[in-house]
Image (cartoon, rainbow, N blue to C red; front, side):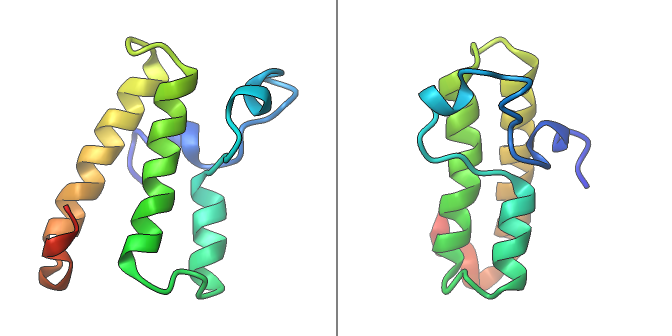
Amino acid sequence: DHQSSWPFRQPVSEDDVADYYEVIKEPMDLSTMEARLEAEQYMTPEDFIKDARLIFDNCRQFNGENSLYVKCANKLEKYMWRQIRTVSEWSHLE
């Protein structure tokens, strides 16, 4: 668990953020990604990255650029790309 992953570990709660699902039409979170990974629903690395990007893009769309959530998204995204670069077969993905 990366220290900046906490806002994205579970789906956004409608009780906590009432209008989230009015704004964000394709929500994504890390627990959903983990379930998809375990169910072998990612056929390619690109499919996995698409969902990860969705987390970050949704966060930036819903929150102000100076919000703590966007700062976490930026840090986690940079970490993700550093990890991807360590896999030579995935070097084409950037």
